[in-house]
Picture 1: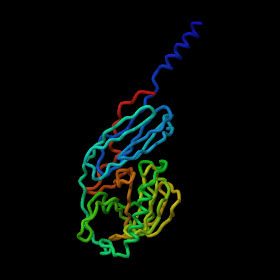
Picture 2: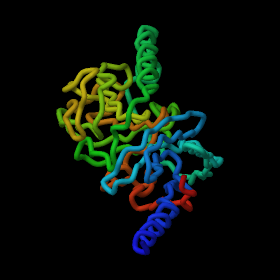
Picture 3: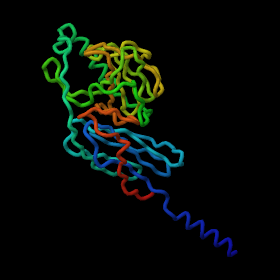
Picture 4: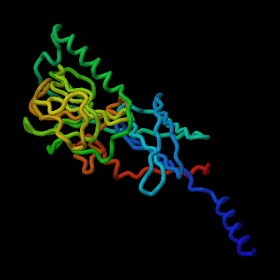
Length: 303
C-alpha cells in the first residue's frame, strides 16, 4: 500500500513539473542588406505566425532529431534600413515582439561602360522590359513551403567582380544599387542552384539576358542572370547544387560572368554571408552570419 502511494506521488510530481519551454532565436542587430534566420522551438507541435515589415507568414513547426518542434523562417533587413524594425511572433495563446536594429554598411561604387541601348533603351525595347518586370513581380510574390537550408551552395567557383549593394554608374549615369553579386566565371561554366526548390522562371530578359528564378519557399528566391544556356525550365524541381544553366554574357554585361541574386520576401539581400565560406570584396559585404550567434531570449512559460 505504501509503495503504491509512493509511486502515485512520484507520478503526480512529474505531471506537475513544467515542460520544456519554447525558445526564441532572434538577433538584436542585422546588417543592412542581409538575410537572417529566426526560429522558435517547443516540445509540442505548433504553428507560428511571423509578422515582419507588414507581411505575415504562417510556419508549421517540424520535428527535429532531438524530438522537439521547430518553426524557422528567413527574413531580410532592407539595404536602406535606418530605423529599427519589429518582429512579431504569434504562437497558440500568446504573442511576443522583438526589436531588431539595422547596422549600417559602407557600400562601394561601381563605374561601368556598357552598350548605350542598356542605359537608354530604345522605344521598341520597352514592351519587353515591362513584360520582364511583370514576370519578375509575379515570381517574387511566390510564398510556398520552406525548402531553403543554410549554408547555401556556391553557384560558381569564381570570386566576386562586383559586390552586392554598391551604387552603379553606367556610362556616367548613376543607377540603383546593385541587387546581386557578380561572380567571375568563363562562358559555359555550369551554374548550380543555391538551394533545393522549384524553377519559377527561365526566360531571356532584356537587362539580365537568359535568367533563371528558383523558389526555395517562404518567399526566398535565388536568381541567376546573363546565362548562355538553360538546363531547366519553369516548373522543374531542383536539388541544392544541381546545374540549372551555363554562364555567359547575355543582356547588360561588360563580359562573361554570373549575376547571382538572392531575394527574401521581395527584398534583395547579400547572398555571400549565407555561404559556408563567404567570398570577400573590399568595401562590400560584411562577415558571415555563421560568425554571429543570435541572441536567444528568455524561454516563455510552458503551455
